[in-house]
Image (cartoon, rainbow over all chains, first blue to last red; front, side, top):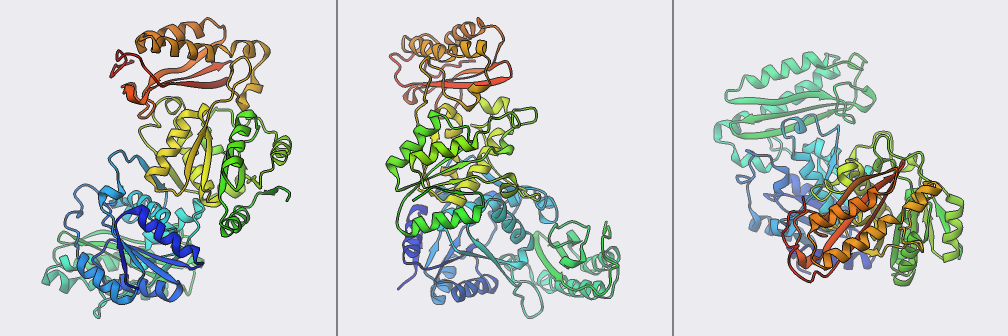
Length: 294
Length: 294
């Protein structure tokens, strides 16, 4: 059966209901398009786990702040659809703004606390836009499973919190970061890098690996942050938005070693803001416990 | 089959799923208990329309502000369950706070604009609490239809907006206000009135009827408000919280006569705050159009 491409919420809803009627499970991969291997790895996970896979492609304006790259965000719909069709998914939901946000739209979903740190600190409206649109998409598709990438670690954490707090009947599954051969995390925004920036960008992953090694050796979070910030700043034309070592559950600096440690960063290369992170699972000593990482 | 009484969200969810599996429709009546004929009229509507009816009883703390009557709110669970069992509903969901709000709860659903007027003005956190808990309840029960009383006119309007904006797959049905023989709108809070207050309270409905008559005759909204405020204030020990004549859709003073006109009020009798409203459908002239009611 060929892939369905639908822009009307009510129609994709009816399609998804017809799947559920047949007692088949639905896996859902929400995306903003400009698909890369990271997205496709989530689609593969869904295809393996669920009877039918639905992907959405929607560049959601409500998760972009003023002055952010909403208009410059890459859009490659034809290529995206070709890639998805080849993979054998069931349907793609491609709404426009006129379908998703009516003029009199006035409802939002918001997770507090864990959205005020990391990306939420520099992008104050971002996660409210994400949770609102994901709640809408979940209500339209009604999936059994939804797949999110671990590159957007905080986004996945926020979605999981929303699902738990609002009793949403969906299981959230995260997929590991997919990287280029030189370690750069796949991102739709990578195409915006010029040649020089593209050459510098792998420093992010190299720094995260170094941070992991130091943390495993028991170097304090404060010192690790300082050292990897210095390493990143050696590149010209970069600006660190944030660089944090936090508890992977609370996203706070107060680290509980039983949860492991999350090293997360956002760095501007020119106008292009890239994020990356590493989850350090095992700590050999307890020097990092309950330490204020400042 | 006897009525199921369940306090665990996941268990009532599984029960509701088993109903859906049989292709039966679910009608849902969310309540805070202390059931009266108003609630029961909604239950009857659901029983008539849907294959199975589920009622929830939960005094939701997040919709009460500081200093409001959360602790004093009447609780009559045994009697409520007896009434519901007699009516032949399928299940009652009776969660406790420990089921509904975990210690680390941090997610809310909020409708803006139409929640900043009328009850929202004097109860600033109220509707955020309502929309959050109703979203949770919808996600747990997954009803086809949900029933709300028109006494809480603004609440029903806010819920409808949330359903529309978040693409929630439920149809909202409202039921008319049920009144005592002397016109007082049924409310769980009526039991809090002392004898004198109970004697005075019918002035609310009498005033609304008078307002309707005046509006039909073309008296201006400003004048109607003044006259019925004077009438209510003739009672001792009452305090008008608000008294508004608004468009029933926007809830703003700018009235569009094609929508009709809503007269809504909230009045304290001692510590007991009662609300009531009347929807005036037909206006014989256009004197009220686009008039600033102040």
